[in-house]
Structure formats: C-alpha cells, structure tokens
Image (cartoon, rainbow, N blue to C red; front, side, top):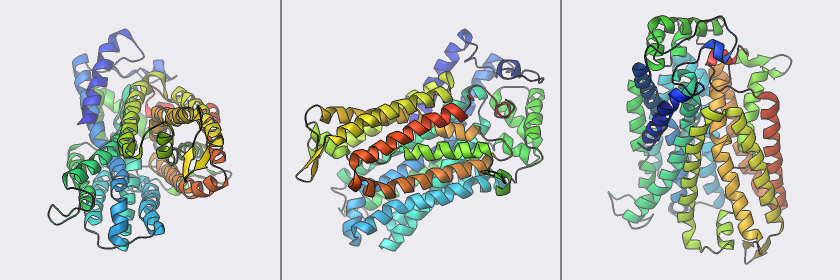
Length: 513
C-alpha cells in the first residue's frame, strides 16, 4: 500500500508538470527526439487515455516489485530472531553464521538461473514460482525443528531472493514506457528497503505482543517463529497479484505471440494498435532471430570471455556490493554510543536508519527519470568516496576501551556523520540506479541471461565482502574502509568510461545508439 501511495503522488506530480516540459511529457517520445531513426513517432492516442494507461502500468509495476519487498523482508526478518534461534537450537557462533549467511548462497544460485528460466517459461511464471518459494520457506523456517531444517529453509529463502533480484527489475523494464521506466524500475529498491523496515517493525511488534521472543503465548509457538511465519502474508499477496498482471510484451514477441504483445503495448503505453504494431516490429527486429530461448553461449566472447556489455553489467553489480554497504553497520552500535546514546536505544535507531533509507530511495525514484541514471551514479560514487574517506580517517583515530570502540573528541560525531552520509548516498544512487540499468542496458535477445549473470555477481560479491570483513577488521579497521573507498572511486571510473545515459530511450533505441 505504501508503494502504491508513493506511486500515486509521483504520478500526480509527473502529470501536472507534463504541459510545461517536453522532457517529462506524458507522451512517448518520438524517435527524432531520442535518437536518429527513420521510424515514425509513437504518440498516445489521447491525453485522458495516456493518464489512465500510465496509472495502470504504475500499479502493475508496483505489483511486480512486491518480490523486492519479500526480498527485503525475508532477509532482514532473522535479525529479531537470531538470539532466540541460538538458544533454542544450542547453536555455536559458527552455526548462527551459517544460518544467516546461507541465504546469500541461495540468492546467488537463484539469481543465476532466474533469467534463463524467465526466457523459457515467461516472466509471470518465474514471479509465481518466487512467490511459492517465499511462502514455503516462511512456513518451513517457522516450524523448523533443528539447525539443519532451518539452514535448508533459509537456503530456500535465498533461492526466492535470487529470483526476485532478477525478475522484478526485468519485468518492470519490459513493460514500462521509456519516460517512466526509471522511476518504475526503482520501485524494486524502494520495495526492498520497505521490506527491511517492516521486517524490523514486525519483529518488534510480535516480540512485544507475545511478551518476548521466546514467549509461548500464541498457538504454542514462540514469538521468533511467528516472525518468520509473518512472511506468509506478503507471499500470498504477491502470488495473487501475479495471476492478474499481464505477461511482458517483449517476452510475448520473442515467443511469436505478436497479437497479444500488440494489445499489451497498446494498453500500457496508451497508443493505438497500429502504433503498437510498429513497436512490436522493432522489438522483433532487435531479437536477431534469437526468440525467447537465449543460451548462455549467446553472452560469451572468445576474446573477452563475456560480451562487453555483460562485463559492464557485472562490474556495476559487483561494485554495488563491494563499496561496503553491508558492513558499514558492523560498528553502528559503537558509533551511536560514542556520541551519547545508550545501548537500549539501538533497536529504535536501527529502525530510524531503515526509515531514512526508505525516504532516500523515494528521492531516488523521483530523480532518476529527471536527471538520469548516469549523473545519479556519478554523484553517488563521488559522495560515497568522500564519506568513506571520512569514516576511514575517523576510525584511524579510534581506540579500544572496555571492548568497545571509542572515538575521541570531534571524531565521534564526524565518523557518525560520514557513515550516515554513505548510507544516504548509496540509497539515493547506487542502491536503485544499478538495478534500473541492469534491467534496460542489455539487448532484448540476451537480457534475461545477462541480467542473471550480473545479479549473481552481485550476490557473490556480497558473500566475498561478508567473508573478508572479519579478517580485514582484524588487520586494520580503517584500512578496510579505505578499501571500500577505493571501490567507490572505481565505481565512478566505470560509470564515467563505460555507461551511457538511457533516460527517455525505449529499450530497443538504447542499442541503436
């Protein structure tokens, strides 16, 4: 509901501003405005139909992004349950680490096969499969009887997360009109951070209502089990909505179902069937005879291993993780304490940080179709670099006292500011914009498989980051954040050298430039 309300606010602003700006007009831009082409311009049939159609496509995109909500919810929900799980199953720190981290391995595997599967059975069927996986995994985690049971179901959760990582942005990019594609694709990231926020709120609410995480006051189950079982609700909602949304029109073209594709394009892009036929012809031409069943061999190159555009996607996805967003929170409790907050405030501050993350992502949704993906990424990279350097310098002044990190003088608040600046910069730029680009930067004939490879690289990089941070922290805490600052600098170089702006271009036009 929050996603839908945000969409309606942004859509109202977009429609209101349309008469004053050709760049943000609600009509589909003509090819003359976007790129050199001999094709005729495609304009909406009428303004009323255009507004109604874009409201429809916005709601359909929001439905497709619910997989991102489950991604965020199911990965974050374990935070409130981890201590009770450790006691209930008598786990060692290694066992807890496995239960938490195994989801990442499942996500890498799910991401790797999601695009391939989407090219064979369709986008909607993969979304339905993800919904079923999330539903079964939530039930499995909630009733698990041993460490091995829980580890298996957390691995299954990761599989669903990997599917959601790929299929949400892929589907939204393929249904969205060019001038709305950025903000609609960014809904995936907004849904993820909303899922994280609501998982924290859900955990807190359940624990409070049932008298503690280990309390047996409802149906004989402790609160920590209900934290997992709460994931059944969004999974059912997701699965129900997938039944009623249309299949991707570009997938329909690839399958030879051109008449169905014409109707979907006409409905969602507010154009006539004749104009939709022109769009279908362009999509068909862009497939180069590949059809819907692209192979992994199609993205390989004898000279470079992968075709260049896939390497760029892998670089973007990998650096999104390697800039260190996951581990910036490792010392968050110590940072809050260093500026005067007591330990009892840590949960509330975590919720506050998650809420700020949501608001920053809303800003990104509003900006991405106005200033473009490339500029957003460049500014984000520069901001992350500066903030990580500030954190590095701050940690270099730290000392250990009573087992806790102590930042003396002005460096306590400055390091805290740097850490939150980094989170804010990431949330506005690299968090959503990378997934938007990955959904649109690959040609139609390899998009599913190429997206899968890039998304899998993102998860593998996340695993690498989490596995190496403890050793890097022991070696040098400021040194570890200096490495992340270098990654932020590399992310700027990659975007500056290899990423072109895609704002306002139809997917087929991106690869005609």
